[in-house]
Image (cartoon, rainbow, N blue to C red; front, side, top):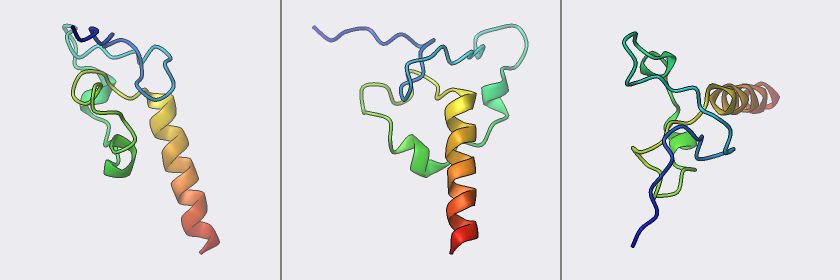
Length: 71
């Protein structure tokens, strides 16, 4: 039997993802563009079941921007 995925945990860093997609107000994650390259790092068991946290998105975007600047 498959384990249930905790949707409140970021699949990359395991921190609380602060997702409020089921809350009365729209969550920050509904307005955030998550790069496809970052989504590809999520294991299949978590895809469409748990949101990547804002910190991981910002860290990835910063790292990507720094790489582009070096080139």
